[in-house]
Amino acid sequence: MRSIPVLSDLTAESLADFLRALPGVDAVGLEARAADLGTRSIKTSSKSWAIDTIIKLIDLTTLEGADTPGKVRTLVSKALVPDARDLTTPRVAAVCVYGDMVAIAVEALGDMHGDPDQGKVSVAAVATAFPSGRSSLAIKIADTQEAVAAGADEIDMVIDRGAFLAGDWWTVFQQIVAVKEACRRADGTHAHLKVILETGELVTYDNVRKASWLAMLAGGDFIKTSTGKVAPAATLPVTLLMLEAVRDWYAATGQRIGVKPAGGIKTTKDAIKYLVVVAETVGEEWLVPHLFRFGASSLLNDVLLQRQKLASGHYSSADYVTLD
Ligand SMILES: O=C[C@H](O)COP(=O)(O)O
Image (cartoon, rainbow, N blue to C red; front, top):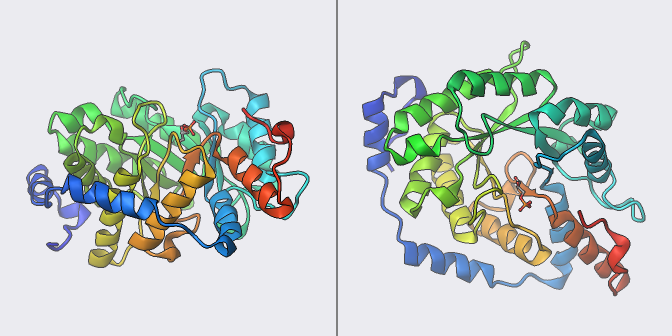
């Protein structure tokens, strides 16, 4: 890996040179590595640890046009107390909502609003004309600033896939830089920026690798696979590829970037595969809320069923957890 260019030194040309020089992805090798890691089993004694780790890493998500304040308050209740019959169940990392629902989520969290590494629950807001990303930069910046002003701790922005696929990497880069700046608060701190690549629209693994590096070069704190609105959403090979980019970035810069697979992860079994891929690629130290998240709307329900089964030896009745 060549040395990493400094953000302020980058130009359209040097960015393009850097991205073009990234090695091509061996698709067969990548998929074989992901398949191999995905079939590894974990010890029964590790299952309880895995289940609680998954819960602590979930961004519990509702991103529907029909979201109401009541639905967001219910989501927050579930984030805080995932299982009212077992108060040893950990909290999720964050709730993830549209920007206009941030204030509702913040209010509902009250004193428990805060850093998931401290056992509290953050508020993540999707922004920048989610999910399409089709609006002017001014609108994207305003969208971000409004969510941050309302109390969002994290901004999940979408990249401009149209610009990316047209080869206009510089526009994508500049937009991420501008949105990162819009994440800044008056006190100098900034909301964490997750950059959604929407890998299901990027066509090739080479593009996923380029977009990952582009997002990191532009200052993204996290790289996230998908909006959940486009198929395919998160896959194991794509997540592995993004983790490898993060690993190489860390080796070159000493800076740890987070990864968030999102969309379509619904079962504990699948989530455990992701834990194995993380542990084997970047190490278990990445399995903390500020470095890894699952973006998921229904995964928590399955994880709670598995947790109850592990504790009691049998499944609880089907209506034990909420299914929406
Ligand atoms: O970012 C999270 C996704 O929108 C959730 O997708 P999902 O409903 O398939 O779990």
